[in-house]
Length: 403
Ligand code: SDX
Image (cartoon, rainbow, N blue to C red):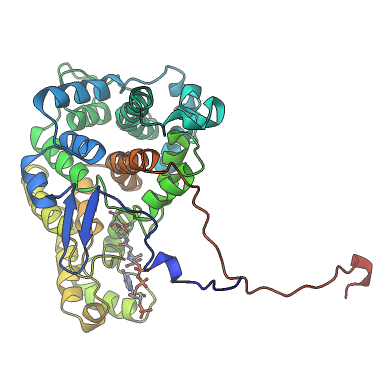
């Protein structure tokens, strides 16, 4: 145990990798994907184009994007037996539990993607064959993420599954699969499809957050990427992480009205409640994504009508922003504070909100996975140490002699 010390609780100040993918300045509230400011991407790019940027490090040419998009949309189709898999869950299973299982299930189809079965150098050689093999797993996971999410949604709604349509963008195709009720030539609202595309883009990556760390920790043993993504999905499920967008709405519903905000704030200060959607391990100012999401909400409300929780959310936001308890701890709105209001206005069920975080985040997880597989010197298993503070050596006592 010589020289070992717990450097910081919860990896507060520990860097385990170098990365070229996402840059965050938590004090200045800056977020860039491969050097491009999130504000520029959100207004000028699309989710799938940004996915290409995150994974390959450059903005695609028209031909590169056309090929990338067609590969991903092509892989949106899932195996027929998947329907039985999704129907095997109880009617009230949380969609995040379904999705976490679905990613691991998906891996069982592709033994050729499993280094344990095919030998460890499957993805790490960096030659044409292994790059192409990596791409295929990436296309499959991004393509099937929306189909699986839509299937988890429809099984909960007691509806039949919908084959992914052709001729729609990635996000519009997802909305189509969610909402299609058999109407002839149904098309999702372009305003809502655009709003969801911006939200997907904003949620695509966020450097080494808890779920991305989980994916890389898992992938460091060279397990297949489907199992690593399933692990990341499980981590994102938690209310301190991706589950916060659902927790914010439950919090707003429990507060009930702006008049009850002061009492809620006092309960938070007494540590009886947590202000979900506020605070962040890295941002010590407002999360830059939350400004864009707040603006997107107004666009959506023009179509859907204002959510009755908006007034309470605004009152809570203003009260916390002007309260010394939060200012002193640098607790400001994060990505989850406003996003749930949009999902609710768009009609998604509450427990489906974290699924809307997972679908885009699969891209960030895969960008980091690919970066890890190609890192100089190969993949090293992640195996941190601990400081042992348990009992020193003692001898076994038989059960008859124990009091
Ligand atoms: C995401 O990491 C990422 O990048 C994540 C993410 C991504 O894109 O991947 O950005 C997405 O997960 C956003 C965060 C969503 N979670 C929530 O909104 C849940 C509410 N937030 C808190 O649970 C908390 O702020 C965390 C988990 C987000 C961050 O926790 P930290 O960094 O461990 O901070 P901490 O718990 O040490 O808090 C410091 C102080 C403590 O008070 P003291 O003991 O010092 O007096 O602030 C308090 C905490 O009690 N505090 C809060 C609070 N967040 C922190 N008090 C009330 N409400 C809160 N939300």
